[in-house]
Image 1 (cartoon, rainbow, N blue to C red):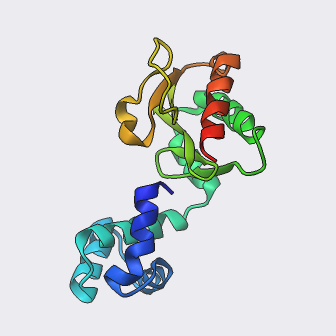
Image 2: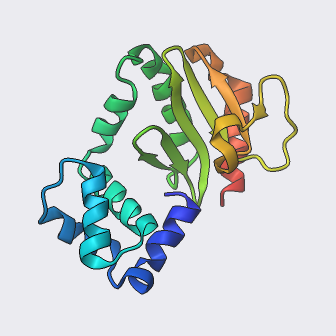
Length: 180
């Protein structure tokens, strides 16, 4: 979970009167076919602001999917990228026992104390790998964060398993070390 989202979840009891787990229990009792129905229910029936309602419904949906389901969904139609993803995961897991792999709907966050790598199947032929390397200069390969915005400082585009090379491994390890 990124820092802004975690702050929102932490503030939820004070701002909405209930914790995320309490809101999830309420939503489980209701049957919504659309995201907007859940959001509107929380806004109208419980007076929750739109931002909190949207977050509660989104996090409730994510909980219902397993990590494996999220990964399968991300790579549907992009199965050729799975070997690259698996190599990235094997590499970062080798950095230490404190590495946490967190699949989301469209990407996978790799976290130590905070996120240091973000893996996103960007197209049918490319994975975008986001890195948190605040003082690292931009190069041809280590480009600016692009669509990742402030979640990452850099992006590397990967099209084959051979792109997960020594240089990339060093950058990921450097990001890991900075995420203490």
